[in-house]
Image 1 (cartoon, helix red, strand yellow):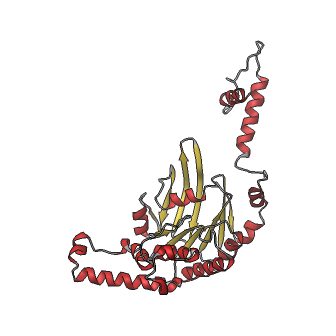
Image 2 (cartoon, rainbow, N blue to C red):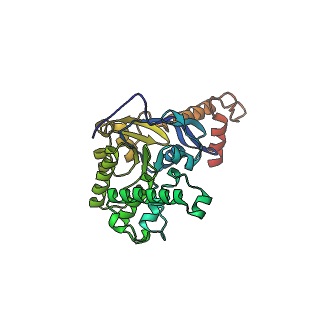
Length: 308
């Protein structure tokens, strides 16, 4: 692994918060990815990792905070984010099943071509040159990912591991400066996982920074220069693989054991204080007085009474 840091990160997420009604899925997350880095994002199920990815790529508009690519705030539209230089894959494979492997990669070139409707209909010299250039680039990517000999195969007929590779090839077709991978080794056997690890290193070596979500800890810690841990939508810790692996809070989060500074601890303490204040403020008439309690004492008392 090679850590390369500069004063100008390719990606800067500042105070990113995403709420769905009363649920806060991501809370005030800061993250930077520098050129030439591979950064991992891990956390238990439901930690908000994919939601955070969706905020970075324009699928969701953050409730609060900003996301910038090379110093410019990204527009909240996925195709404009891709055009800016950020590409991604998805947790669930999203290929065009009835298109060939080559055609799937060509789809990823759409933000890098300038030909419009009339050019496509008339098929003039400019269109033919652009089409030839796109096919050449697509074949280069298939060669790079080891799929060149299957260019004419339907994508649905590829083995699972090769479908994952095809998704990465399609994402690379937009010539991104930053590639986001959402669980790229999910469902893979050890050999496929190792091949994916080597592919990600090769992508980094060609100058593309990588941000990856993964549940395979061996894969993440072997691959990444830095790792950030999300727990209950908040960034718990960030550092090298050694730092993260030795942090007792990370171990506790994965084992479900409460730890000091747990994002849920403050809320629990607030509820306990409110309940204690409400119990101590019981009036002579035996009625619970919630008006003098701090925080959400009134709402807590109401919930407690409802549960009883």
